[in-house]
Length: 143
Image (cartoon, rainbow, N blue to C red; front, side):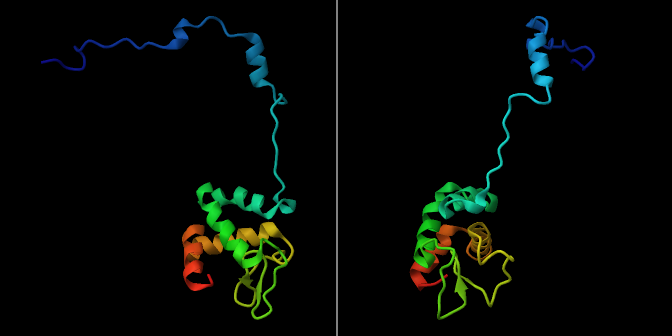
């Protein structure tokens, strides 16, 4: 019977044991604060509404596979127009939010990004996914 103290130990092997000295140029490049890396922030406020929606899907937990359903839903609701207005109700914008029933962001009436963010949150909270919302709309004529 062996115990930890008498058991043969396997030597630890590391690739660093086979490396030579560190390349000074590599160390300098990796430690430089202002290297050649590029950071880009995408301004979604002026883009095509479909591109905005694609970019926002992951933020709401949706995969890109949900986009076709969202596209069908918003095409049927508003044609992706931020100024789409339903005169028989208070529905407005890309997702056709009922403006009298919902608390909307201050820039909802003029911002595609704001409308799409609101719409994706509404879809997530009410239907779970854009495909579920589209399926409901297809069966009921509204969502």
